Image 1: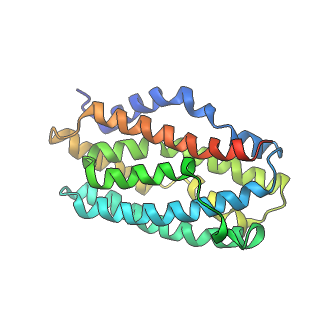
Image 2: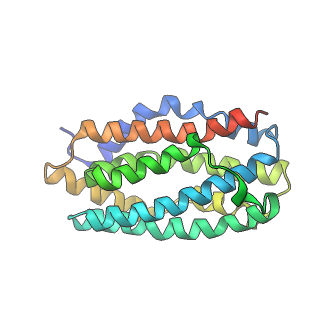
Length: 218
């Protein structure tokens, strides 16, 4: 049984690391090969995802009976709302009619899973599953923002969503570790569940990017 949150996260992230490179869209953007139309699709899908995750994180916080878990999930929710607003400049620059775009099942599977966890997941294992994937998502966003500026002529306003999630936030890290550690200390965290949640998060994350890579090959 793992005794520290950091040790558990290191084990999970080591398990996930070999698949991080399976994202086919981000390298296409960083090389400037992806068509510009992909950014309208990204913005439209993320607009739906951030609204869904905002509700899901509030639900996770409300259902959690452990203070550290409530703090972690409650702290994530405002970020989703803020990020949602940051997409408006990208939508205006690439696809003001984004509301007419039909959502893709491969992109919306991720928030559907977050919503499922909001109803069914144990809090500390859910925190571990979510946070274990933050580093990879942050790297993807940093690479996308760099590619947007270098190859597509986007400015800070259009890149704000990706810059936001690329930034390191030590406070969120500490909150996640506290939530996970509380579950370990109380013998409530099932390591198998934490690993399962993390693997599924990674799979749904990659499905999001690769669904768009298939539609917008570069």
